[in-house]
Image (tube, rainbow, N blue to C red; front, side):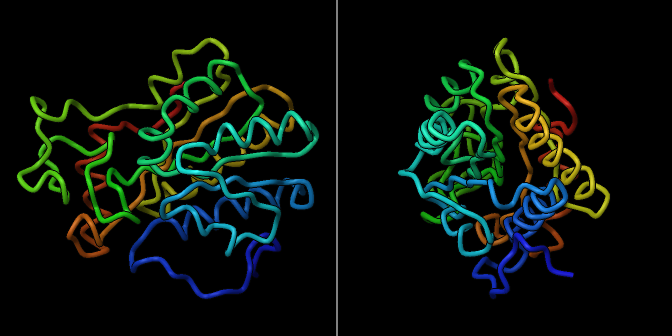
Length: 237
């Protein structure tokens, strides 16, 4: 049965992309918590931008990287609404790093869904802050190097060190078992906001077969066998 929070529309995402799975998990959580009519999602530029085409609740679009600034404003004006951001790694961990850190440091009572596929998707497959060492992208054709590009940014561990942050968890959508864990984490992050516990972030390791130059099946294995070594799954805070 289709969730009330999902529209009956065709997907535009590339075959094997993880965004559709995460959309479904968000919709599941919203419906199961009975908060659809008071939920507001904020989506920035990037592959996440058209999430409002799929969700059947209110959404706002922000400038690239500014989702948490917009979400903060909405939540302060409408404190009883359930406000969340849905952001990719190029947005949350690069262009929006300042907004991410300062919203977390203030302990804003928000929920953040952070989709990490280790690459810029919409703009052409460039290196992102979360791109792994030796990973080839449009701007690192020989692979990311520590000397030229630095190390992958572990935004969840960084945010978790801030005293005002309530909850941080990293999950994945590479298998049915991990998808179930991801759903529970997303639902818990929304419940934290309902209970006014403060800033909660869920990082979801997601597939991008197109810019990883892999098949959909290969991308699942790459998350499990490669990506999870750099970004370990589990409750961080």
